[in-house]
Image (cartoon, rainbow, N blue to C red):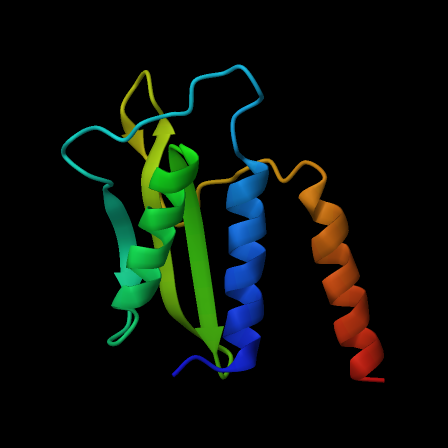
Length: 119
């Protein structure tokens, strides 16, 4: 069972994926019939996260995403999903950098609230 700290991370991921939705009037990206490639490492029992990310990507026409999950200070999942460069067919790696745009405001707010919570 995922603890609340992970749920918040998944909500943040969902917000990021939704923020990457195509601009009005643009055709959303459709994954090739071969499915969404995934790269990186994952711990046991985290397969539902793969399914959730791929579902959101398909639903919102997002070509690529990356996800990292840590538990007790240890990295338990670092995955890249889909395509970093469609023209070159480069797959997203766990360390692929993405532009955050205005989502950085939300991340900054969460970080500040966490620091306030910790005193």
